[in-house]
Image 1 (cartoon, rainbow, N blue to C red):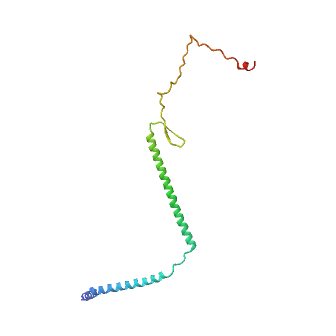
Image 2 (tube, rainbow, N blue to C red):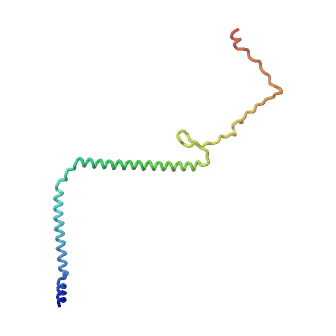
Image 3 (cartoon, rainbow, N blue to C red):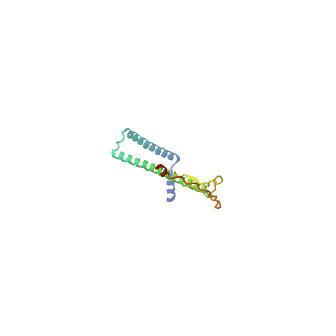
Length: 153
Protein backbone atom coordinates (compact mmCIF):
# COMPACT_ATOMS: atom_id res chain seq x y z
CA UNK A 1 0.00 0.00 0.00
CA UNK A 2 2.87 2.31 0.51
CA UNK A 3 3.62 2.05 -3.14
CA UNK A 4 0.20 3.23 -4.11
CA UNK A 5 0.39 6.20 -1.76
CA UNK A 6 3.75 7.31 -3.19
CA UNK A 7 2.35 7.08 -6.72
CA UNK A 8 -0.48 9.39 -5.73
CA UNK A 9 1.98 11.88 -4.37
CA UNK A 10 3.94 11.84 -7.63
CA UNK A 11 0.78 12.41 -9.62
CA UNK A 12 -0.21 15.31 -7.43
CA UNK A 13 3.32 16.76 -7.72
CA UNK A 14 3.06 16.95 -11.53
CA UNK A 15 2.66 20.49 -12.83
CA UNK A 16 -0.51 21.53 -14.53
CA UNK A 17 -0.43 23.56 -17.73
CA UNK A 18 -1.54 26.64 -15.82
CA UNK A 19 1.40 26.32 -13.41
CA UNK A 20 3.79 25.89 -16.34
CA UNK A 21 2.48 29.05 -17.97
CA UNK A 22 2.78 30.91 -14.71
CA UNK A 23 6.41 29.80 -14.27
CA UNK A 24 7.25 30.85 -17.84
CA UNK A 25 5.80 34.28 -17.19
CA UNK A 26 7.84 34.61 -14.00
CA UNK A 27 11.04 33.64 -15.86
CA UNK A 28 10.32 36.14 -18.63
CA UNK A 29 9.64 38.88 -16.08
CA UNK A 30 12.93 38.16 -14.31
CA UNK A 31 14.75 38.22 -17.63
CA UNK A 32 13.17 41.53 -18.62
CA UNK A 33 14.06 43.02 -15.24
CA UNK A 34 17.67 41.94 -15.68
CA UNK A 35 17.80 43.41 -19.22
CA UNK A 36 16.27 46.69 -18.07
CA UNK A 37 18.77 47.01 -15.24
CA UNK A 38 21.66 46.23 -17.58
CA UNK A 39 20.35 48.71 -20.10
CA UNK A 40 20.17 51.43 -17.50
CA UNK A 41 23.71 50.67 -16.37
CA UNK A 42 25.00 50.82 -19.93
CA UNK A 43 23.21 54.06 -20.54
CA UNK A 44 24.92 55.62 -17.53
CA UNK A 45 28.31 54.33 -18.72
CA UNK A 46 27.81 56.03 -22.10
CA UNK A 47 27.44 59.41 -20.42
CA UNK A 48 30.92 59.08 -18.87
CA UNK A 49 33.63 60.51 -21.20
CA UNK A 50 36.02 57.89 -22.58
CA UNK A 51 39.39 57.67 -20.88
CA UNK A 52 42.26 59.56 -22.50
CA UNK A 53 44.60 57.36 -24.52
CA UNK A 54 48.18 57.03 -23.47
CA UNK A 55 50.47 58.93 -25.92
CA UNK A 56 53.00 56.09 -25.81
CA UNK A 57 50.32 53.52 -26.69
CA UNK A 58 49.06 55.79 -29.48
CA UNK A 59 52.58 56.17 -30.90
CA UNK A 60 53.20 52.40 -30.76
CA UNK A 61 49.86 51.72 -32.45
CA UNK A 62 50.70 54.20 -35.19
CA UNK A 63 54.14 52.63 -35.71
CA UNK A 64 52.55 49.17 -36.04
CA UNK A 65 50.11 50.50 -38.61
CA UNK A 66 52.91 52.20 -40.55
CA UNK A 67 54.98 49.00 -40.56
CA UNK A 68 51.97 47.04 -41.75
CA UNK A 69 51.37 49.53 -44.59
CA UNK A 70 55.07 49.45 -45.50
CA UNK A 71 55.03 45.63 -45.66
CA UNK A 72 51.94 45.76 -47.87
CA UNK A 73 53.63 48.23 -50.23
CA UNK A 74 56.79 46.11 -50.39
CA UNK A 75 54.76 42.97 -51.05
CA UNK A 76 52.93 44.76 -53.88
CA UNK A 77 56.24 45.92 -55.41
CA UNK A 78 57.66 42.41 -55.15
CA UNK A 79 54.55 40.98 -56.79
CA UNK A 80 54.81 43.49 -59.66
CA UNK A 81 58.50 42.69 -60.19
CA UNK A 82 57.77 38.97 -60.31
CA UNK A 83 54.94 39.58 -62.78
CA UNK A 84 57.23 41.68 -65.01
CA UNK A 85 59.94 39.00 -64.92
CA UNK A 86 57.40 36.35 -65.84
CA UNK A 87 56.16 38.45 -68.78
CA UNK A 88 59.74 39.10 -69.91
CA UNK A 89 60.52 35.37 -69.84
CA UNK A 90 57.37 34.63 -71.86
CA UNK A 91 58.38 37.27 -74.42
CA UNK A 92 61.85 35.74 -74.74
CA UNK A 93 60.36 32.27 -75.26
CA UNK A 94 57.96 33.61 -77.91
CA UNK A 95 60.82 35.45 -79.61
CA UNK A 96 62.93 32.27 -79.65
CA UNK A 97 60.06 30.36 -81.25
CA UNK A 98 59.64 33.03 -83.92
CA UNK A 99 63.35 33.27 -84.70
CA UNK A 100 64.03 29.55 -84.78
CA UNK A 101 65.80 28.71 -88.06
CA UNK A 102 66.43 32.39 -88.97
CA UNK A 103 69.65 34.34 -88.81
CA UNK A 104 69.53 37.29 -86.41
CA UNK A 105 71.69 39.54 -84.28
CA UNK A 106 71.17 42.27 -81.68
CA UNK A 107 71.67 46.03 -81.95
CA UNK A 108 73.07 48.34 -79.25
CA UNK A 109 69.67 48.67 -77.56
CA UNK A 110 69.27 44.90 -77.34
CA UNK A 111 66.62 44.70 -80.05
CA UNK A 112 66.60 41.81 -82.50
CA UNK A 113 67.75 42.52 -86.05
CA UNK A 114 67.18 39.93 -88.76
CA UNK A 115 70.18 39.25 -90.99
CA UNK A 116 69.40 39.08 -94.70
CA UNK A 117 71.80 37.99 -97.41
CA UNK A 118 72.55 40.78 -99.93
CA UNK A 119 71.30 40.48 -103.47
CA UNK A 120 74.30 39.57 -105.60
CA UNK A 121 72.58 39.88 -108.97
CA UNK A 122 73.31 43.58 -109.46
CA UNK A 123 76.83 43.52 -108.03
CA UNK A 124 79.99 43.27 -110.18
CA UNK A 125 81.89 40.03 -110.31
CA UNK A 126 83.87 39.00 -107.31
CA UNK A 127 87.18 38.60 -109.15
CA UNK A 128 88.54 41.13 -111.58
CA UNK A 129 89.92 39.52 -114.69
CA UNK A 130 92.80 41.40 -116.27
CA UNK A 131 93.38 41.12 -119.96
CA UNK A 132 97.01 40.89 -120.97
CA UNK A 133 98.83 39.94 -124.15
CA UNK A 134 102.49 39.05 -123.96
CA UNK A 135 103.03 38.74 -127.67
CA UNK A 136 102.42 42.42 -128.28
CA UNK A 137 103.46 44.27 -125.16
CA UNK A 138 102.08 47.78 -124.83
CA UNK A 139 104.40 50.66 -125.61
CA UNK A 140 105.66 52.57 -122.66
CA UNK A 141 105.63 56.27 -122.55
CA UNK A 142 108.68 58.28 -121.91
CA UNK A 143 109.13 59.12 -118.35
CA UNK A 144 108.55 62.78 -117.59
CA UNK A 145 111.56 64.95 -116.94
CA UNK A 146 112.73 65.34 -113.41
CA UNK A 147 110.89 68.00 -111.62
CA UNK A 148 114.00 68.88 -109.68
CA UNK A 149 115.98 69.66 -112.77
CA UNK A 150 113.32 71.93 -114.16
CA UNK A 151 113.02 73.96 -110.99
CA UNK A 152 116.78 74.39 -110.49
CA UNK A 153 118.49 74.94 -113.91
